[in-house]
Image 1 (cartoon, one colour):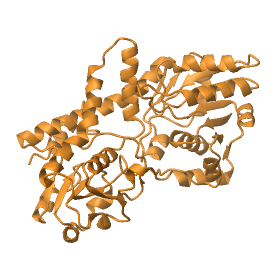
Image 2 (cartoon, one colour):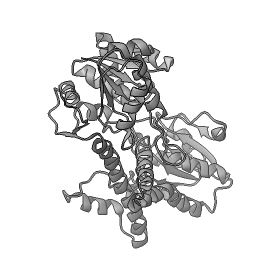
Image 3 (cartoon, one colour):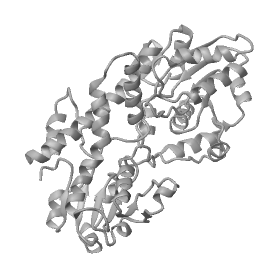
Length: 431
């Protein structure tokens, strides 16, 4: 079988790499000629550790190629994975325009049986809608199947997750599709779940929403810890040793961001409302996350007696380390509010960059953490990049106007920094 991947973003590029790595012939299709030209050279258009080397390896071997030719690509491939974006609309629902366009292209251009597999995160019931889009676009009624096969990739760990998945979920009502997908994933020994398309689609949303719930729960608990003079990191350690809870996603901080959790929680809440069901817990999760950055900013504002005329160093822009993804990053909300309150902002991130719009022209984007600290009245640490922990904080103190450090990720050694003369404040640090 030859595999076509429609969409060469984060999910598409990673999916293409995986199938090439296990021995299949793979083609990536995208309408963005710039992306395709870079990928043909083995170069990624985003940052993901280890992925570019594997892409380059399989481009060189000829097992992985890229094209902008829709007609030829759809005609020549047996299995087609949809890996296009599904961003949030203003009402919180998923925007399916790119999924719909891809489905219509398949229907219009197919010349024989196709297995269409949705890898993009899509609302419950989308598999049924894709069938309708393909049928409506067909000029000849060729047979096809549509299956759901959600991805479970962590940004910054995508290669590890893709090559060593903890489960494979297949949603289909076709035995032929099930057999083909099992053949595609022949080398994986992880647990399999073969279920209905709707169940597979909901598993993805339910998984991400539960992880987001753990994060918001700890963030809300951290506020209580501050009042009770208890360290939330110790609470998390004690909780995480319970195997029913586990240690993952118990780190209090500025909240979640990125391309998955915010939009997936919003879509699940929107879906529930359409079906007259209130998911009050998830509504609360969203609200806690939306305002978590403001909780830390209140502490900074109080310490500085306001932001007007003050210089604030922001360390970290990406929503998490090992990625350049700034979608829904808490750092952006912090920067926006600092600028609104007339602070001067000096920003450093080792990988990520600010959006190129006029709103951020007032931000000084620095080439090192040390440059960002020069003359600052306060530091707000927004991303837990390892290099921030490794910084010479004794020497860095001399660069500051005031040694105030607000740790939005609870990554620093509070006792050490206080011993060096810093005013240190984390989230839920208890003092």
